[in-house]
Amino acid sequence: MPIVLIAAAFYLLAAWLVVRRLQAQRGAGTGFWQLTAVSAVALHGLVHFLAWRAAGGVDLHFFSALSLVALGMAALTTLYAASGRMGALGVVVFPVAAASLAGYTLAAGRVARDLDWRLELHAWLALLAYATLAIAAVLAIMLWMQERALRRREFHAWLRVLPPLTELETLLFRTIWVGFVLLTATLLTGVLFVHDFFAQHLIHKSVLSMLSWLVFGALLVGRWRRGWRGAKAVRLTLVAMALLVLAFFGSKFVLELLLQRT
Image 1 (cartoon, rainbow, N blue to C red):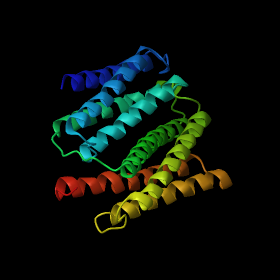
Image 2: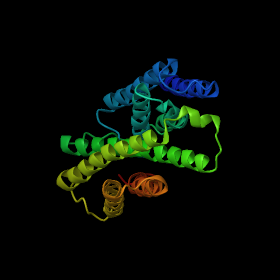
Image 3: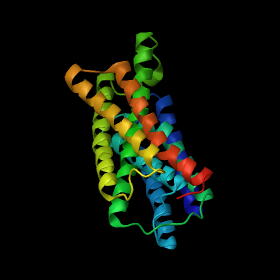
Image 4: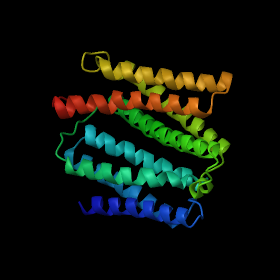
């Protein structure tokens, strides 16, 4: 519990430091907040490692998976900030990571499972894909807000802390490409390694995941062949991410929390 409290405090402190930098109009690039965020990410990972070692297996139930996805998002946010001005992501991501870690700790007591390496590979690919594409969804919202403000000629102070519109759009599509590759690998390992991948209790998850994959794929092809961008790119990104959230966390919520099945 002390590690959890320290990690959550570091996340919130990092978010507050980013906000202070934004208010001072200094941008949200590298700074002391990043060291705080790295510490929070390290402690967040340590919480899961110690829990798994004590349980003798990996816990990938609803709250654990939510916490791990948030951990991946926080790590990506810190990495992005090291090479640009995307530290502003931390204002959203770090509080979410703190809340998900707290939720995981309060819901402790779930049964851990000693997974076969193939199933574990599938699970880790899925978590990485969800974390990467979740960052893409946040970037898409930022892009939409930036375009909307510029169209209305509303030159808010927060616009100056974001990269130029074209740079933000490029980062969005690079993130989607990485997430798409990870999602493709997730679906392939699911078909190859997961027993009864199309079983009754997995069919909704499978279908929604594939629909999300198709939407992301269509967006990338449209970008390549027709130069899709702006509002269309934002809409398709958010639709695909919504399908993915329903596929993974929606199905886990119903199966594990409502139906009490694993």
